[in-house]
Image (cartoon, rainbow, N blue to C red; front, side, top):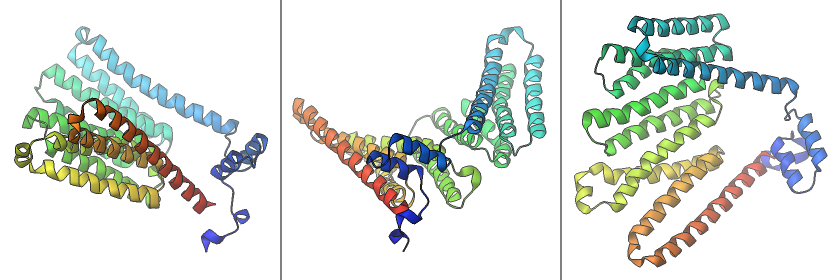
Length: 335
C-alpha cells in the first residue's frame, strides 16, 4: 500500500525537510541546501519575476486609484462630456492593451481587470452627471452584469473575486433600499452566493482547473459565509419566543450553520487540508457557544467573566491541539 512505502523512496518535500530540521535531524545549512536541491528556495530569476508581478499589480492599482481621485478632485471644473469621454478613452486604451499584450499573459489579464474597474467609474460618473436617481444597489448590480463576459473569458482570479464582491455589495443595498430592512432572507441569499462560489471553486480546483488552484479566494469568501451564518444564530440566542415565531428563517439559519460547520470540519480535515478554513470554522463555533453560555448564565454577574475566560482558554487550546494533530496526520500520509 501507499502508506507502507519506504520514506527513502519518496521524493522529498519542503515540509518534510522542515520537519526534520525541527527535530534536529538536519542542520540549518543542510536544510538550506536541501531546499535548493528541490528548487524550493527562489533563485534570482524567480525573485525578478515576483518583483515584476508585484510592481505591475501596484502600478495598475495606483493608476485606477489616480483616475478615481482625479475625478473626485476636479469634478466641478470639468464638462460632463469631458468626464465621460476621458473615462471611455481610458477604457478603450485598457482594452487595446489586452489585445496587444494577449489575454493569456498576466499583463493582459491585469489590463482587463483595470478596464473592469473603469466600468464602475463610468457608471458612477454617468449617474452623477445626468442625475439618474438610481439606487446604490443598481450601480453595483449593473457593474457586475456588464463585466460578466470579461470575467468568464479572463480566467483571472482577482477579476472573478471582484465580480463576487460586487454582488455581495448589491444584495445588502437592495435589501436596505428596496425591501426596507435587513432580515434573515438577506443572510440566506448571501450564504447561497458565497457558499455556492466556494463550492464551485473547490469542484473546479479538484478537477485541476489551472487558474482556480490558489487557496486565498475561497479563504476570503469563507469570512462573509460564516459571518452571515453566525449573525442569525446569535440573534436567535437573544431573541424572544415571539420574535422566533414571526421569523421562520430565524430558526432555520442556525441549523444550516451547524450542518455547514460539520461539513467544513470533515472536508477540510479529511479531504482537503486547509488549516485556515478549519480555524475560521472552529473560531466561529467557539464564539457562538460562548455567547450561548453568556445568555444562559447571565445572572452570575462577576463569576460569569471568570467562567467564560477559562472556557475560552480551554477551547482555544483544544482547537490548537486538534489542528496540530490534523497537520501531522497529513504530513504522515504524504511522507
